[in-house]
Amino acid sequence: MADAVAGRDKCGEPRLVSLPLSRIRVIMKSSPEVSSINQEALVLTAKATELFVQYLATYSYRHGSGKERKALTYSDVSNTAEESETFQFLAGAKVYHDLAQEDICSFVRVCL
Image 1 (cartoon, rainbow, N blue to C red):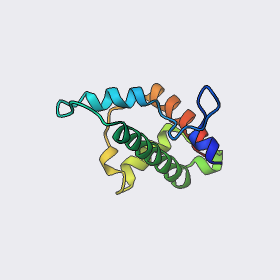
Image 2 (cartoon, rainbow, N blue to C red):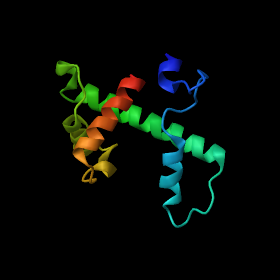
Image 3 (cartoon, helix red, strand yellow):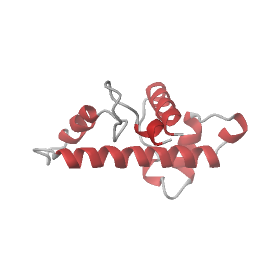
């Protein structure tokens, strides 16, 4: 199970995180307060992001209509953001529906 969550690199070695570190670095550097990023901070941020997305997806699946369909949809995640106090900070976030749905579903398949 750990291999499914962490994934493997091109050489077959286990990876600590599944998200691309280069993209996370770009997102982090987009903040004007950030001048340099420590490698450990980058990996920890990636892992924390993975855990958050996994928790959001699991919560949305359990509390949404996904259980009946055995599928997680964008509307399940959106409803969770609107209705759950824990995820209230996500309510109203502008997300490109098609891109978000594709990314979330592919990441959740790896995590679950």
